[in-house]
Each structure stands twice: as structure tokens, then as C-alpha cells.
Image (cartoon, rainbow, N blue to C red):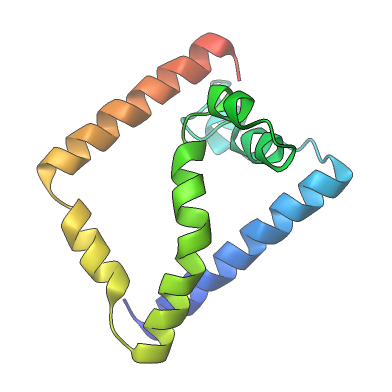
Length: 127
């Protein structure tokens, strides 16, 4: 990953954090999901903003029920900026290493099954 790509990811991370903070303060109800806008069905990520808001309110179980992907957010959100900043500071491509590790068929199948299940879960629940 180039430095520009790492800076872009860091910028996206910061914008995401700003979105979470603003949504928590002002309770913005804006549908950003292209799948929901175009086709009227929720994607596997639908409900994530509400799930994050539930986490901030201390409702962890309700957040998992809203969207099980929140578990990944709990893991990735605190770690991501450190990986990106370390990558920029040391010029070592940590994200490429992580990507190479996860780019094995077994992980892709697990991810596809998990996300497919979450997608069905969201459609059934009309998220």
C-alpha cells in the first residue's frame, strides 16, 4: 500500500469517526446505503450506525442484535489508526501483510458465509 493510500484510509477513518460523533449528538437519520436506496433491501452493513450508537449508549447486546458486524468494529476501530500511523511512520506495509493473510480461500468462504447470513438477517428484520 502506498503512502497516499494509507493517508486516504486514515482520512476515511477520521471522517467515519466524525460521522459517528455527529450522529450521536444530533441523531441524524440519513440513509447512506446504496443497496437500500437503489433496490430497497438492506445490505450486510445496514444498521451499523445505529449499532455504533447503541454501543455508545452502553447497549452492547442490542448493538449486536442490530448488526452482528459490530463485533468486527469493536476489534478494528481501536486498532486501525495505530496500524495506519505506524505504517506511515515506518514505511512498512502492514496492511498488505494483513491482506495477504486474509486472502486465503478458507477466510474468504468464512467471510462470505458470515456476511451472507447477516444480509439475510437484515432482510428478514427489515433493517
